[in-house]
Amino acid sequence: MRKEYSVIIIDHDNKIRESLACIEGETLLDAMTRHGISCRSDCGGRGTCGKCRIQIVRGHLDITPEDGQVLSDSELEQGIRLSCMAHPVMDCDIRLIFDNETRMDAVTADITGVNNEDIDALCIGIDLGTTTLAFALADIKTGSVIHTGSRLNSQRMYGADVISRINASNEGKREQLAKIISQDIADGIYTLLEEARIKPEKIKKAAISGNTAMLHMLMGYSCEGLGRYPFTPVTLDREVINLKDLLRGNGYDKGLPDSLNGIPVTLLPGISAFIGADIASGLMACGYANADKPCLFIDLGTNGEMALGSRNKILAASTAAGPAFEGVNISCGIGSVPGAISSIDIRDGKPSCRTINDMPPKGICGSGVCELVSELLDAGYIDSTGLLAGEYFKSGFTITGTEDTDSIITFTQKDIRQFQLAKAAIRTGIELLLSGYGIEYDQIDTVFLAGGFGFHLNALKAANVGMLVPELAGKVKAVGNSSLAGALRFLTDKEAAFEIEHIRNVTEELHLSQEERFNEMFVKYMSF
Image (cartoon, rainbow, N blue to C red):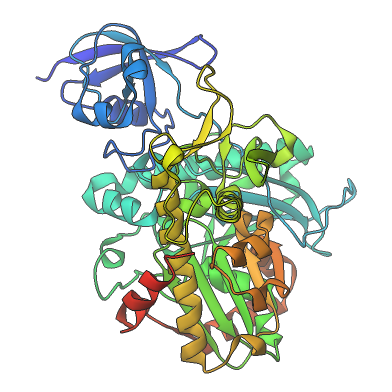
């Protein structure tokens, strides 16, 4: 029998949250996950991201080599440790100090809100994103949106990116991943109805869009085929299941009124293992089924997907951009939450920041990263290779705060490299799509930028750092969460089902990893 150690969890407000048992040899992160405590772990528990920090209040936790690499001497002296590396050897009390937010900025551009208490038939659209779950409540007859909401995907405790979660699923975490996302969906629906003050019996149906891996995890499907060549999904077809079976089948059996249990939930169809229902749904929402001229669609989320074409032919690709566009793998990075720095200007060496919802700055999200790099480049603080000037190379560029405060937000050389990798992957993907489709930039009619990053992005600054070309900057249209918009349209427009199938039929996937020029172009576009 392995020993068990009692761990008392103290919440951010210094109140005792609960006591849990940590089994000998188990990490604190795993123990908290097992007890339903959501903890950010962008690196998937490998001890590199530093996002799962906790503080020892009573007891002892050894300092691991990973702690020494990620945490400062001052933090180590204060008893701060990485929960993914911490193995208790005695009873202890710990304080949660990691980011505990669950609500995100609800980016739903091109969705018009109304408030009509007389509506009798409502539907719920859900975008099952790798980082964020977005929800919208709409009138079935008119498509008018009553209320929107969003929350962080609690699966992030198994890593910020899809590959980490696919690996976790294939290593025995399949049931746990399904249960976690089911709880997020149930909690999101409950909150949506509560905030909108809508009676549950008015909900008649729902639809879920998401990338192929997220939908597999929701349904409890094996991800073995998604983790190795030739990357074969269990299914890409549209599926319908009632909400009760969906949630309770995953071991989640609480939180929703009985009247919701029988509503049909449609999982929208995808195109391939890497071009999922979120992209098919987004293309449908952007009008690709009826487009006469070539348009470019770019979804800059945790993954980088893009599509080029019109109603007769669409060429799509997915590129391993990494999650830097959502603030992941950035030292002070966060998602598009209230307080995230989304825009930056530098004047006379002094940065001026704007945050989401004008809240006090808590970190920097993807659009803020892009703007900061552009500003640092123009101010001469970084050169064309991305190298920070000598005085900032070691400690980074301070965006806000001072060394004497706990709220200092800095941008480091490592952060610049993360952004360079992401933007080079996107630019290379765009160039190869254009080449494969056989057109030039001036033949593109509209550039649709989807997702929270695209919604807040300054297109001119994106062109300045080489992610886009100047010719496209004036053609950019931010469409917000196009995956969610597509799910709502599927629920409220009878033509949508035909359109999404048409898009699937005319879309061909371009496998960038098989393109001979990819590596050469990728290295080229790393520079600014």
